[in-house]
Length: 483
Image 1 (cartoon, rainbow, N blue to C red):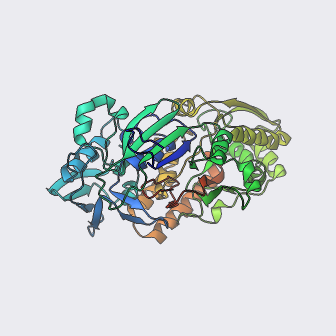
Image 2 (cartoon, one colour):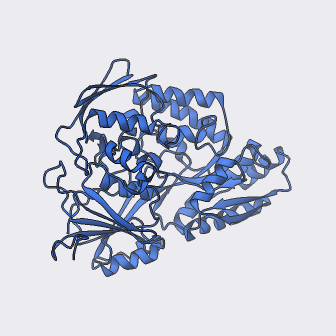
Image 3 (cartoon, helix red, strand yellow):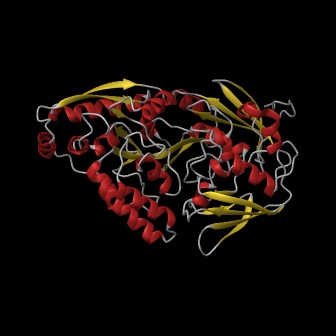
């Protein structure tokens, strides 16, 4: 197969299907997991995760943390260049961190505790925080830690979202909107012997069954989704295998607690205990999710007994509705994603609530529209999940803290806010876990969000692919891939 440059008939191309077309190719503006998939090829991060989820060096070779947990000193890798030939150094990192804190950046909340950045020398950077912030290193393993070329940002301005330049293993070549996105090998990549492939092509396939058929036919080498129904049909003779591993994320739906009928916690509790999560996991997902009742999957240290779903209890649900003055039931609209699986979940929830006199009308909406509805508060119930992050703070804080950026429920509790803030500034894992356990006791009673399950990461991978490493953040790394 020829590369985009037409170099060699033997050039190695890795074809990966994505279920969504990446929008903006700038980590400071990103809000989609499909974008994160592509970013891993273009951008290196200051830190990364290994197969066990441990934080490991990347562009920062090592780091130190002061005794008061407020000052982080990063010792950067030397001799690294951006894909435009300009040098990677401490000034470039400072530029990126300052840019990520600007008002129009979607990373500003991740980095809001940075008080001062000092360039000590070309390979050393000191970052002072206004308060201890336990998730800080974890945040640098994702988009806030991805480093762009300052020269490219200055050159392209607002159009940098279409002209990304990092230090990563592959260089952005071009795209056909809605169809494909092509990256070519970075010949000057700093990791010896990498990347293995000459090219990576991301093919946009919104339909998981279309992607699966392309995997079977050899048109794609990896799919970032896999049909749940096909998990029962795996065969030793198949030309593909499946990665089926627990994720860091969760699925469920928000209640708008600022409006009836969900302004009363008894009503929210009633809905919560009417849902049979195990049935949903079996019928819709063919067992490839874990029924859940918290934002913390079993691969996170904050996971605890509170994640066990409640038993379905119609009698108690009716008693709660009576206490809330809804003895005769009520009706509400649930806005949900457009996938067949999400529609099926919505239909099952419909059926589970009906015996209590609760009638649910389902409305489908694209993710962008859902987010806008959530921000505006123009909904009653809204099904939006989260792909998850390594540190538990990033799975709970912004979702439920008063006025949090993802708190579409408009719920607030001073006691909960205090517990979540304590967990942020405490580095002792046992103490952080205790704070999260106490926070969950509040959330289980108040139910601003109905947690349904934790996804498994499901990738289909051709048997011809070598060098695949599964990382718990569920994002495909391409540098080591070959075939």
